[in-house]
Length: 157
Ligand SMILES: [Fe+2]
Ligand SMILES: [Fe+2]
Image 1 (cartoon, rainbow, N blue to C red):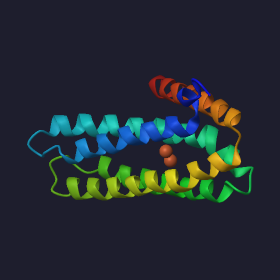
Image 2 (cartoon, rainbow, N blue to C red):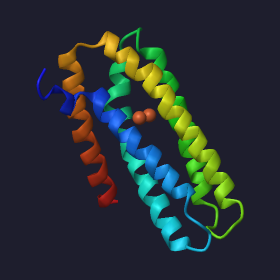
Image 3 (cartoon, protein in one colour):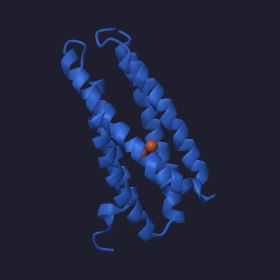
């Protein structure tokens, strides 16, 4: 088992979720007095969440959809992703100096936090039971590669 924790998709996703919780708190703690910092933190958080979510959609959810034990959790996660990107668009479309910016961000953060918890409790626990350790490791490697590709694709646009 040595080294397996490095590329197991469950560990990779949980570690990234931990970082997102921190980043989202940092965005919440920015103030209207420093819109530059607020924008910088928001963009960083949004782009990291985006590459993570796209990589889940590219590598993990299609595999989960093939197995009836994991399919419901994948379908649920896709709905959370759609809801999250909608609220994120709402935040991005609101002027930083508006008094509505923070309320919108707090709701976006709440939806995303709920999704991260739900994904860990359902999707990740289901795949731990359903998929072999070798497959979890293979998916982890593919997830990291997909994330890199997604970041490259975004640069190219
Ligand atoms: Fe996730
Ligand atoms: Fe997700």
